[in-house]
Image (cartoon, rainbow, N blue to C red; front, side):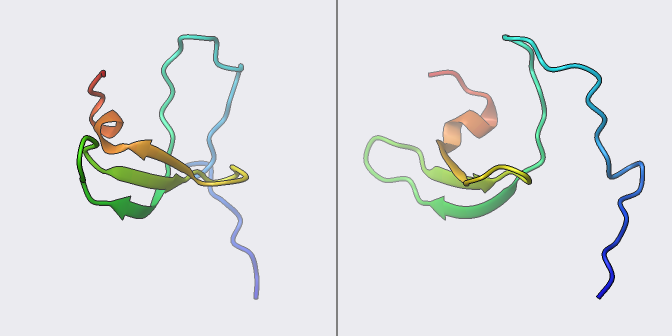
Length: 67
């Protein structure tokens, strides 16, 4: 089985580290959704490529809605 070499369009080049307060966009895969219950509006578990573990966040943050 051969590994596919990523094309330049698949590769993200980071020219500098982001500074505190910068906005970055990440591609992530949704691995689990917990339906809304009680006071929370649902939970979403995401896997970011290269991250050591998945993260779970409140679904309202995907809309960019502040607390």
